[in-house]
Structure formats: structure tokens, C-alpha cells
Length: 617
Image 1 (cartoon, rainbow, N blue to C red):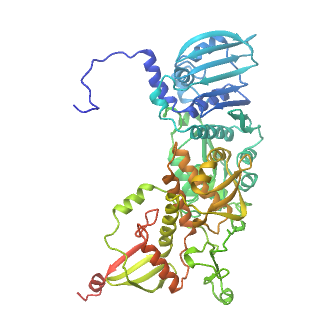
Image 2 (image 1 turned 90 degrees about the vertical axis):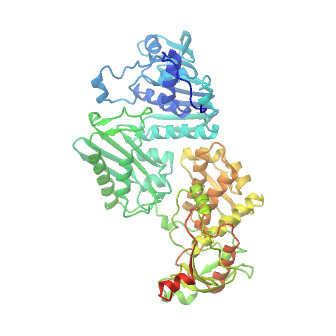
Image 3 (image 1 turned 30 degrees about the horizontal axis):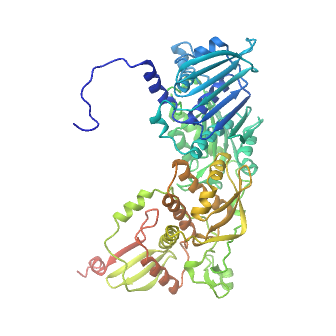
């Protein structure tokens, strides 16, 4: 019998607490789930101020206090039982839901897998009531002093479900997810005061604002808030409103795209597709705009009861909703106000210390007579080491980057061509300033100069990391980086790791502001502030999804991203000696056939293949 097979057993009725734990597992996945459910309850109770107090990653303690309507003792004792709610009373109500909660499962699920103390007072009560529950069992009920509202203090989450507890990520990662939850609610309800405290330190304090743009200025920057475009389209039964970024302001992932349906944060692939269609002609596939979009629709035209965490919805007319979203965003992008006030093109390039590198600058004669300026290498102070050690390049749009999939590199290694780069070769020339033509003993090789250089830089950096010999370089001009407050928390928690393990020296100046002072020398580049920020965000993406990522994982993410940006660009004429040096260094890499993203570097054609093509054989 296989290990996962069991002998047939008789059907039996499960114990009530087992049933409740199973049900709780569908609703409460991690501490952030607790925060979400309790904030929803507070908002449904009409709260104008919601405070969260978190210890550790939230599994140790997560307390949510609000100034909502509160509960009487009778209501509170009912609320901790499964399927008890004040928000619906009949089957018909399921198709006309106007509240965030409605199933009557959240509080019962939380108290089932934790040690919880709930204190509440309603306007109808002379005094408050406090109930202590452990693993779903009520331990005590007593009077307590409190102003109107409710406090739910959750301790030792999953204390009685060790299997679930061991799947939690690091405390840093779990707290990051809590911050993300608070951020979503703050965006959806700017008129509510949200405050988040972590280990007795205030992380977020977001007073109520009169509009969404002010809240975005609090969570991000005033510059971003000013640059966003207004979206507002109304058709019978559907209103689409919000703010979106112009095509010039993008990110490398969707993490700053927020969709709310009737005040509820949701994920919807069809709406994502509509957003992509609206930006289709303006953006590449790996660029994603900032989206803060609110869809207000008749509750009878949307089903929110299709997902355990209510993170997905089903529209009665999805095509219609999709079309309205696309129309609304397209109108914003094509309006007269679509010229952004935050111009990335005007961001000054920040040059690193290149005393030992090479400056690429246009010769005087090229400035006046060449639309495609030919840039040549010139040694700096006579100490340069050639093109491959240069980090200053022409100002061009950043090359495309994709979310790194480490498996793609392993697959590329496995499927690498059987041919080897020829031990002896002769440079024939350069095709379109992008491909190097190499004559070998057996035929012809075509080398993509950008991905070849990317592979060289990538392996140099990994070698330094493995040997613990990362040489850091102090930036001539420290770079100020602004992060959304949720990502700022994650970055601040890992500054020591980035400094000691990767050679990235960053100081936290409070809030979402950081100062980048040091960068690995082998990966130095002539970047704008936004490009450095995007690279740091790539590293944060690994930290977000890995409890304790290995040095190799962090290094590969960083190296692949930076190598792609720092490598010599396409449409860049090279001198014969530069092309020769590039090929020599490529031959010395462990995998000269594909870049860190899996793209091919070399295409080889044997003399026999060429002769067949020309009918000589």
C-alpha cells in the first residue's frame, strides 16, 4: 500500500471543534487574514478610527480597536458562534450585499484558532463587556470599562493548529502582509483614520482625508499623487472612478494596482486584461502602471460569495464591466490632461564613481551630423580597462526586464546547444549595431552583444558573492529612494542583510524615504533614481515571497536585473578590439549560451549548413 493510501474507514460525524478548525482554515490563512476580517467588521460597524497593534509577525499578538457601534453582551456571545450575523437574514439578501462581511464566519474562525479577548460597548449599554475565549471555548465573561466601540485582541494565532503555524513565513514577511492589508483599506476608505503600531512603534498613521489623491500622497509621495490622472465614467448601473498613472510612470509588476468593487478589494483577471488593453499601445509587456480603480455597481449584478476570503467576485455582465473599465482609462490617457507633471525623462542621470571605468561620449563631429550618434570609448585618466569595465552609457530607455524565473536559467543550461564557442575566431563585423558576426573554424556565429555582456556581468557578480569578495562602490551622489510605506517596512527590516550579503548600502530616513550610498562595483551603472528603485523592488519581491531567501536567490535576482540594465545596449557601435574582448570574456563564462532571463546569446551556423543553403551540397 502506498504511503498516502489508507485502508477504508467507516463514515462518521466529525467533532464540532474539528469542523470549526477546518472551516477556520479556509478563512484565516495568516495573521493578515485576521487583520482583514477585523477591519471589515469595524468598517461595517461604522468606525471612523481603526487602530491595529501588532507584535512579531502578528501570530504573537494582533489587536484591532475601533470606535464603531459596539455590541451588547448578548450580541457579542452570539457573534463568536459560527454563522451568526446582523448583515443578512434571508437567501435573497445574498444577492443584494452592501456590507463587507455577511457570512458570520470571521470572528468564529479567529477565536477557534487563537486565544482572544474581546471588549465591546454599545450606546445601548451602561458599561462594556469583555469575553475571553481560548480555542473556541469561552473562559470568562465580565463587565469592562470602554468607550463605544470594539477591541479584538488576538494572541497566539494557530496555537492549537501547529501544522498551519509552521507554514507561516518570517515575522518580517507576515508583518509586511498586514501592512498591505491596512494600505488597501486606507485607499478604499480615505475618510477613516487608520493607525498601525508594530512592537510599540508607529508604522502608519493615516488621518482621514477628503479625497483619494491625499491618501496616495500619504502612502506614496506627493509627486506621484499629483501626476496621477483622474478616471470617471458613468453608464446606467456602473460607475468607474479613481486614479491611474500616465504611461510614463510604470513599475515592473502589478503590486501597485488596486481594484475595488463596491468598496471591497478584489482581484479580477478580466479587469486586469481591460487595463492592459487600455495601455496596450503605450506600454511594453513588462511595464505596469499605478492603478487605483473603484467600480460601483448594483450589488445584484455582482456575486461576492464565490471565494473563501471574498477576494474574487463574479459579474453578471463581465464583458460590459470590462468595456467600461477600458473606456474609462482610455479616456483619461487621451485627455488633454494626460501630460504627466512627473517627468521621468527629466530625472537627472546619477553617475557613479568611474575613476577606474570608461566614459562613453560622442565625438565632436558626431553631434552635428549623425541622428544615431556613434559613441566611442575613451579611457578615463588613462586608467580605464576597456568597454567591459565601463558603466557610463548613452541615455536610452531602459531595456525590457521580466520577472526573473530561476527555473528558466536551469532549463537553459540543460538545453544549451552542444556547440562550443570556437577557441579561435575572427571578428567579421557588427550587424545593425547589435549583433557581432564571428568567423570560426567551423562556420559563423552571431552573438547578441547585449545579452553576452549581461551574462559576463552576471557571472562576475555571482563569483564575488560566492567568494565573499563583493567590492562595493560609494556613489558620488547618494540617491534618495521613495518607497510605498508597506514596502518601506519590508526594506527597513532587511537593510542589514542587503548591506552585509550583497554590498548594497542603504540608510532609512524614516517613513518611505531611504538613501542609497553603496552599490556593488561590478554592477555599477549610469541610472536614474527610478531605475535604482525598480531594482531594489525586484529584491523586495523575493523577500516578500520567501521567509528566509538564500544568498543565491537574492544574488541571482539582483544580478540578473542589474546586469541587464548595465550591459552594453543594442544599436551601440563597437570597435573591433571591443568586440574581440567581449567574445573572449563570454568564452570564459560557465554558460555562454543564454542570458540570466533565458534568452539565447549565440546562434551558430556550420559551414556545411551554409553551403546547403546556397546549394553547394
